[in-house]
Length: 66
Image (cartoon, rainbow, N blue to C red):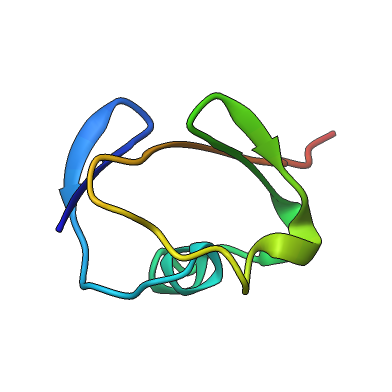
């Protein structure tokens, strides 16, 4: 199945949730903001939201520094 992730096409397996994708990318979910099809997705919905063919996601992570 193909989605758009941060503007690039990406193949993912059927039935993946947003949480699965974040895990596969080795990102800490508490530091990720997700926009799904131009709508901000609440963190509580990451495990409940299944990705569909053609979905467009933007993932933004927090970066610390000094």
